[in-house]
Amino acid sequence: MPARSHGSLPAADVGELVGVSGTTIGQWARRGYILSSQRETEPRRYSVEDVAEAAIVHAMLERGVRRTDIRRAVARLRASERPWPLSAARLATAHDGRGPARLLLHHDGGWHELGPRGWQRVVVPGAVEEVGLRLRTAAAA
Image (cartoon, rainbow, N blue to C red; front, side, top):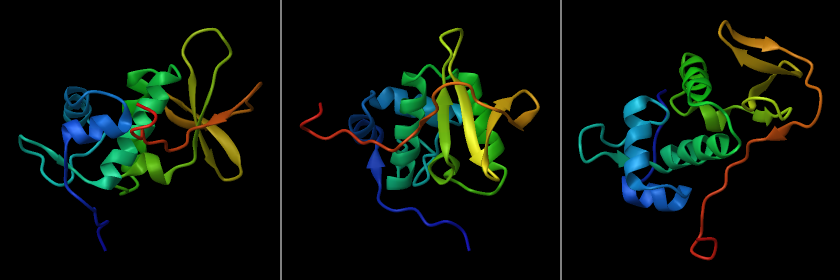
């Protein structure tokens, strides 16, 4: 059974919830970071599940994860036939202070780092900060 989406929001509303502009939301959809699952033609419309994915993308970018790593993660996770792969995965970041943040996936009892050849199990020295879903409220704006 295909995943069902809920709601229908314009990019401006999604951006307000996530903490970016509506233009940024449209760019993320065109570049494949998120879906516009309610309507892929202009003007795009987004589901609540799409908002969750956008919030996770925003959190990863704020932590210093490279856009190419986010795009690669979405593609690899979506290959498992999950339309909203980021919110279904246990993701984290690790940063050693040198270079970009590392993107990690918890799978089979351990952390895996996304590299050019896919997810590879690693031992992570230092702190791992899990990526959680956070939406902005009027009080937080």
